Length: 80
Image (cartoon, rainbow, N blue to C red; front, top):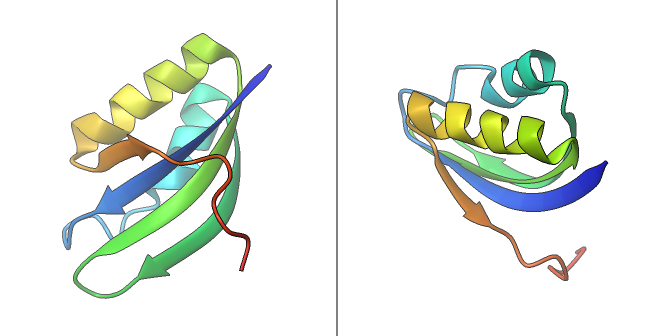
């Protein structure tokens, strides 16, 4: 199992969809939302992903295919 920390950025169309939950279920990924800011018109979330490397890659590909932006997060991001 590997861990990766990423930043998901969501458009207005996506903020109402359970993207993180669906990705975790479809691709067998353990998710830990470390920080997030979601409003009616946009949102972002720093999410720790844990699982098989291939499953994580497929999950990220699926999220981007839905229209979200996915960027690597600095693993030493501030906790507060």
